[in-house]
Length: 263
Image 1 (cartoon, rainbow, N blue to C red):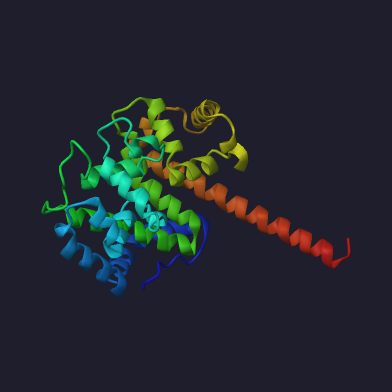
Image 2 (image 1 turned 30 degrees about the vertical axis):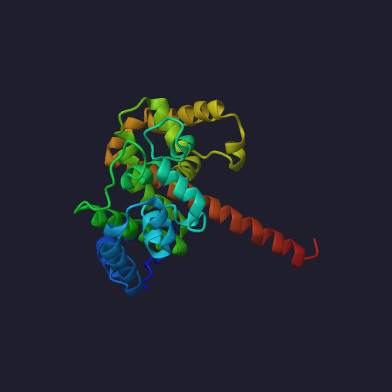
């Protein structure tokens, strides 16, 4: 399997990844294992008629979940089946009970639920899911080299879409807060403490908006419809992540030196 090349950390690594993304992504997509997984999905997904059939085929489910960044749920077959079977039309559907919007997105994409139509047989369906799967698998592989790069790639891909959603600003913030990759990036970019997620949800919203206004001049997430502002956000995140990594390393080295000196 081709592994993304990120020669340095921090902004230098991010700039290199941006400049070489197309060629690296092409090489990654042509990896033997990835091609086997995507070919199998392309050839077999059209025969699936129920959520039970999908979760019963681990190879199909791997691509289906991976396309929405939910690969960690691969062994939660009953849970995923319920998500798919209940759909997203009814307010009390399981997918609608989660703050993380990816479950709802996956359920809507397949259309197994009541009041929905099955989409797996549509000509563009398989390729759309495969494209998402490849993209997210590349992000994961980049994250194995440097976790900050995974979050940066995710934000570059998703932040503009969230910003353009037809919903209130607070709804956008709550969506972001429920989406782990974007939340982690925003917390670091806005220099929020690790224990921040333990306070009341409405307080979190207030703090997020206050910090965003100070950092970006506005607490309206629609500003990130501008790709320049998304890059500004990513830059703040990567710089603060690098500072955090440096401080952690420096602190660990200082402690080790003190111990060696018998202090």
